[in-house]
Image (cartoon, rainbow, N blue to C red):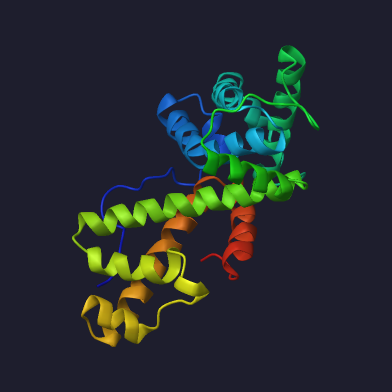
Length: 247
């Protein structure tokens, strides 16, 4: 198994033309793919940030998320990004804070402190929201955490779909059982246990995991590069996320 996900056309715009340049392009064929890439990675972090850190209810957070991206696209507000001041992720969050503040003034519906917000989520989601609000004391760190989660979730979905398409379900199952699914009793299964479970030699388990991890890292790096404001920002983010320089 090679674990390659390189077949077919690239899913992301080449970042030799940066995301910001692409967002400001006059050509819709350049601009729209960049916009779709931005929304694909940032939609969930923006929604959760509005929901948790800014305490909008479910419906308002959904509406504001859509409005934020629509207005950013229509008014080119993100094109004013200056990489000498902050990373693009931070710049986008600051723009979102301003947008949320204006929405609060217009609607007067943001509940603070002990206020009762209208919520339309199931109990499990409510428990998650409550836990997240404790973690959102630092808005920048919370937004970064959700951004990383969305980045990795998207990479996992892409790798999983690629493996299933190519009939590599066992290889995917080994990867999920080891690196993704919560380990039983906080203990990852050993290679011997995985070999017995999937009826393959231990050497195959080693090969499966090495290939899947490479595929996941490559996909995550591709997505990271696609939404970085500059090449320098991409290298810095990659170093922080993966502990090595991007190559």
